Image 1: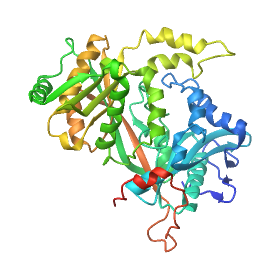
Image 2 (image 1 turned 30 degrees about the vertical axis):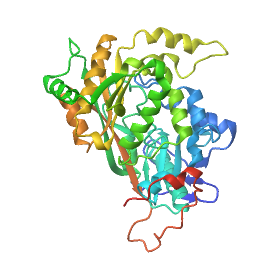
Image 3 (image 1 turned 180 degrees about the vertical axis):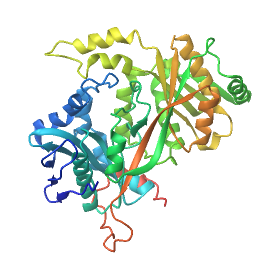
Length: 430
């Protein structure tokens, strides 16, 4: 099926009169403008996921903050636009598109982003949304779009393509099973897969022998110390997290350095979830060079709130979360980072071993290691040796905006205005 749409670039609107199976009439795509459109963008998933037993409604206040150009620190370094697709007056889809000067400086000078895609099982609507996003990026001189991402790999990433049999864990995306087919029909192809591993808690909380031996070897050196977060010096420990993260992720696929505001913003979101027993550091001669952070799976409690903390001023959602929090029984190993100069020391095994022992003592019965890049062989070998079972796969997609054979594909200069921090971003690597 051809999913071309006629795009009015000046207004950001797209209309198609094509007919798809089970649908008739046109689809109109326009940028989000004003409070009513913002509410429609934020609340659309409620209609699309109604009746889905696995969907966990995100908090509406967080979704509104994500779109707010004053509150979201991404807009210090990037630009974005948000679009809604309608059939008549009914909203049937949404998408965001973005340009990040850090991604262009570090990875690809002509790559833009898309994300926050939600759509009914409607190929015409999906095609119109992706065509509009492509047109917005093409106008800014870009050749490729990559996504979905919240706005970067520091946010939720990927489309669920395998493992639709349960709810997502904290800060992992979820979507209906028809999304991969919509992406393919709209000309998007696989860029990278992100893997999730499920690790049942052993009866004694101890890792497999091969991991235990690696951990013992790593900590056998007198200059290595493994310790949990110290609540008495929490600010210093959290600053160490940023330092290690910046080094460890510098060369990762599509990663970008976090600004001061982004780190502070992320920390405000995570701090209520962080348990000192589940944040472990490895130090070499007193310097933190690696860490692993595991979070209680707050989604087990969050789904009870149904997306709202209060109803008519009454903290109904908060009370529901408080009750459900007592039943949280799994963790997510959200990130493990090791500075490049220390990756041959086996510190990952030592950190994961101690974090699992702590999770066992706290009564958790299962852990999830996610997400891991499919070509990160060392991390995936660790997950498998740790007793993990590959149970879920998310996918990043890309779409070429200018075919190489098209003589008009010479892009114009990107029009995003760099922020003051952009000068500190390393040069682009091809």
